[in-house]
Amino acid sequence: MVAELETRLRRLEDEREIIRTLHAYGHALDYGYEDRFLDCFLPDGILIWPSVEPIVGHQELRSAFRAHTHAPQVYHKHFMVEPIILLEESGATVDSLFARIDCYDGNPEIRSFGRYRDRLQRCGDGRWRFKERKAELEARRANI
Picture 1 (spheres, rainbow, N blue to C red):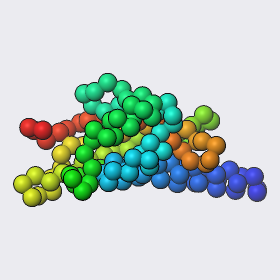
Picture 2 (picture 1 turned 135 degrees about the vertical axis):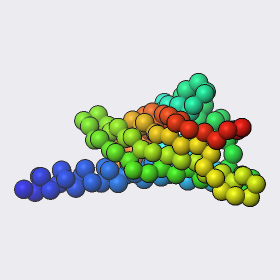
Picture 3 (picture 1 turned 30 degrees about the vertical axis):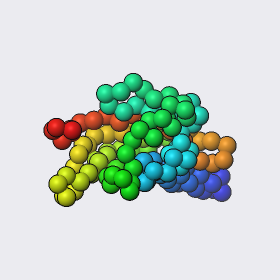
């Protein structure tokens, strides 16, 4: 009975930490928290954004992060909702929905939306980090 409760608690804690990583990614990207952004990824983590070659490892991730816009120069919001988390022996896979909101002529509007396909791994410090994050773009505002 105790072992079963410990297993269930561990799964809940793992799911909570995975969600923490998913949220940290968007906050870091929107507000320019470079160290927090990099901490979302394993040292050899892969980020796949639409229309660019895969971004591999912290050095390339840092370059991509620095090339991206951040507040207060440009305000936008990356929203992530409805994660479906599958815990596995060697890690976890997560599918979630995303939307990015930007300001156009003084009005907030959806710039794009799609789905994140993630593979994460639990690290020695208890944090879950992206082994791979793939953004699948399903729609984008015209003329971007």
